[in-house]
Length: 80
View 1 (spheres, rainbow, N blue to C red):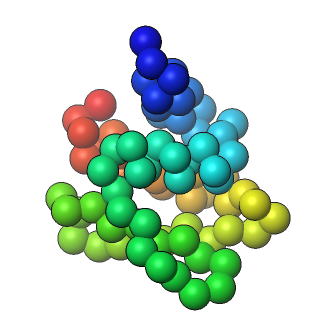
View 2 (spheres, rainbow, N blue to C red):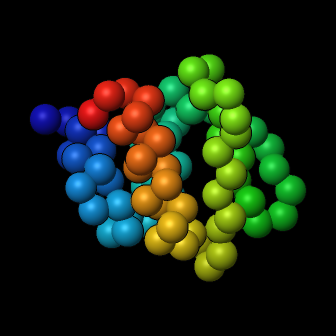
């Protein structure tokens, strides 16, 4: 099991436990592209998703709601 697999498993089972930098690393690994965004928001785009995933970042982390939302999006996108 690779480090990305372990990170994905941890993210899908308990999303709030990860820091934003780990979520960003995982999203990039799963095929998301980070688009430049202004201010404290990170914007990600994926070819299979019609909308952009926008995550506000404060103090090098994001709120629990955005972590859970990203995990649900990944589960739906990859049928996990």
